[in-house]
Length: 202
Figure 1 (cartoon, rainbow, N blue to C red):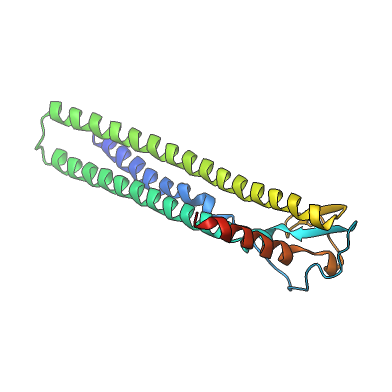
Figure 2 (cartoon, one colour):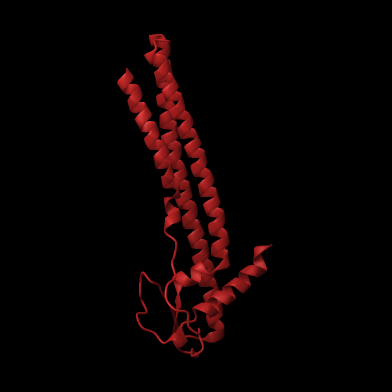
């Protein structure tokens, strides 16, 4: 029976470590590299222009606000899972200590073993549930950002009349070489943030 208890303890430790997966989604943020240049100065109606989407997102205040809120919630979720995992691990150690000293009847030991196994399974289930919920929330966050950007660009282009607005990033490199005057990133960032400030406190 003691080997079974050590197995439970090992699994509990894994569960605590696995709780860190809830924050895994926090590690893939857009990055911005390169030298800033004058934006949009040479763009004319009918041109094909582009935005650097990674820079755009990182400088968008709505993204910063939503991301901060998301990270705070994810940290709280992980802290709660870690707390539950440490409590389970502590209870398993206490049980093993009692059992090794012969302080429990076989019936009582079996009951406590079953209870600990059930708690371990419930913690695993909770960890999986929270991980799924946080991934879903991040997906919604990203969809909200991209929808806001798309909606703004549609209205923006009604005024400017560009033939097309492309997106490029460090990862995709859709625009490998482009006229800096056709890069409208900063102009769009300023417009997006101005629109967001109007609605942020409502």
